[in-house]
Length: 368
Image (cartoon, rainbow, N blue to C red; front, side):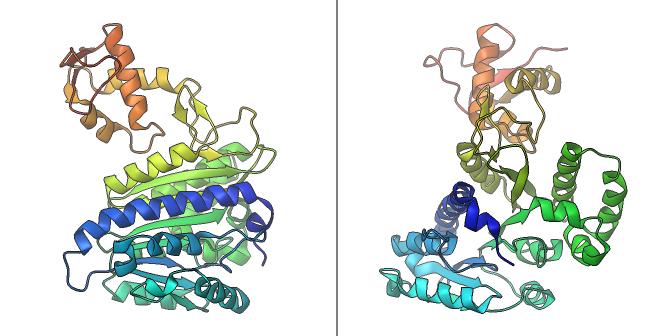
């Protein structure tokens, strides 16, 4: 089946590729600092639905961008193991050619591997039985076949492993109540959760359906251990309908923080400086995945309520409060500066360079 996202929605494809390649770079640099202490240290990038390596207009897709980054970095050249797969033989062969044509590809210590397999339970069993090196797994099945909680679990079980997956929201929205693909939906959400979701969706309007589906998927991913889940939404060209979601899953707050910053910068809009965590080619005001009409004003009220009578550092507030919300560190600093200026909180030290609110500044909230 052709992936229309790559053929037609070129701006969205670029945003998706940019998010993944930016995260790979930062993730790899962080992980390599530990891995390089081991004699046989390695990191891995695995893309199970890699495609031909280039979009229809000829620009490089994620596999080639990742390899270019590795070629241009001394550490990555040494430590990166890149594994790609595509069940379409023509795509796999085209990717092999595109990789071979990359200048400097021969400088990598580990030659990139390209497979031509159907993704199913066999690869999951292999991952489950292996102790993986730190791995960034990208899964883009162009729908839902091959994407499952078990696949994510099989990789995230090991240290330093993160997962990014991309799915066509419309296909999952249509598939959740389709008996013909019930097995795939159960694998994605878990059978009990999928059954409850089917009953719940019958009473919801389209906007509520989307919010519920993404929320249930996020909850399913979080239910398998302590994890951080971050969704990013893509809209169609008119901006009135969701096309895809990019979902990031990690066990580590540092990874969550890094990806949140990347997704925030790639968002097409802001509300009071708060990123929407979506990309929409349309410029009109759109409904948000997280419905807050005045997000900074709302953040002030949330902080006053949650931390009444407490004293915490700015970093502690951010670390404790931002998970599952679309606020970034700058939003917390901005709102705390605003609250300090009107006497709603006390900050220590109070004498600082104007307009700054460092991570170590202590904040005392008033009693209710």
